[in-house]
Length: 82
Image (cartoon, rainbow, N blue to C red; front, side, top):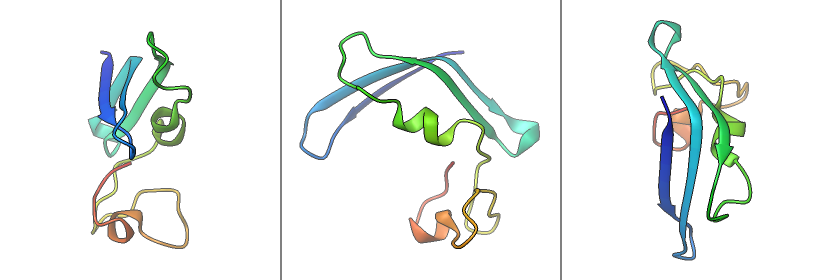
């Protein structure tokens, strides 16, 4: 499965990127796999999402599965995620 990301940056500029490989491994705490990033219009110069999140398990307020040792990211950022 692939993933296409559409978003606007903090300055209001439109950004678009693609991942040729995108999977959520349900039986492994919703581990995220986002790989093979590309952007045909060069709106992204860097794969910040996949490079930081791929291979990470999904964390919630009551189930801290991220690699951060000091804080619980879901509580700190007031949102569950990878």
